[in-house]
Image (cartoon, rainbow, N blue to C red; front, side, top):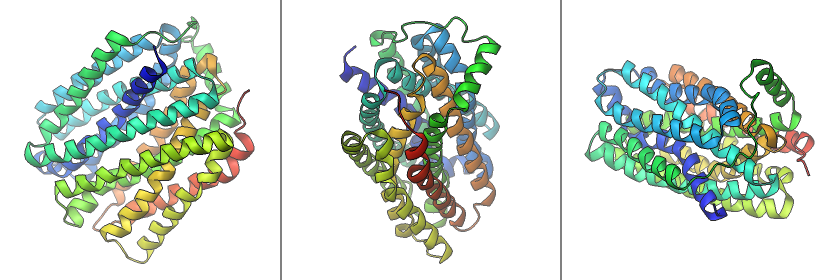
Length: 395
């Protein structure tokens, strides 16, 4: 497999996450109305998917270290695809939540395996550059989801919007079947033994570099989720935007994210992975403090929300590329487990953020805006103090 193909494939594997989230955000208010659900119940379709995404990786990672990346990928993407088509026929919010939980397992298989494949094939510094290119592709996927998802929700309805997830999964599964070659050179026959598994978890979770980069990617992702989970209700229901106008707001989000991935590659070549995040810290701190100030002053119009968020997305492109690569850098022989633990931390915290939003998002945008501000400050602290001190990479 060529490096170009690996980059494209990795972009699609990571891109399954915005397909599972961004694609149907415009449809959330319609789902709430059609299935007679509350805002909290409707947000569970997002938060439960993320929780299943995170927990499943704890077991999918060792499975991929034992049996290889390709079997886990094929089974996981197949599950994602089948759930996408099955959701078209649900008649209750409970059924939709259950299918979304199963779909989260498929997302976990794709994203975790993608990060493990990257560590199988590339050294950390080179892997960070390839990862940033893949995240550029993820941004293009998210951009497409914003346009296609909002158009489908506006003109076809939310059921057709969810069916698009199944179509994406089917195309990705055929690509994996036809072109992907196993990247794991030596299978760990003991990877599924509880003693080995617990020992690996303990070794990875006690590693300072792993914790540093995982906190970086986790807090940055939580800032993103605070807006993604709250924005359909804030922008459509509170501020009165149409689904197409909301989709247009989402359309520009990945453009700024893609800009961040290009900036990340420039920083990586100039400063290296450990120092790159420190130089990009202001792209997270400034918009975080700004949107927090707007919330406290009662300034909750579209521009006070969207402009800080767009600036944050540039910084997010740096933090995710660096954080997810650095988290697995020290564990080439346990890349699946390290990738899984990093993914679990991200999704567990994001699940908590989503639940908090569901409980506190009332008739204003304070919860969403202050949630983003808080997570941006945490990300900045990790980027400025923690990663430069504890994030040294292996030679």
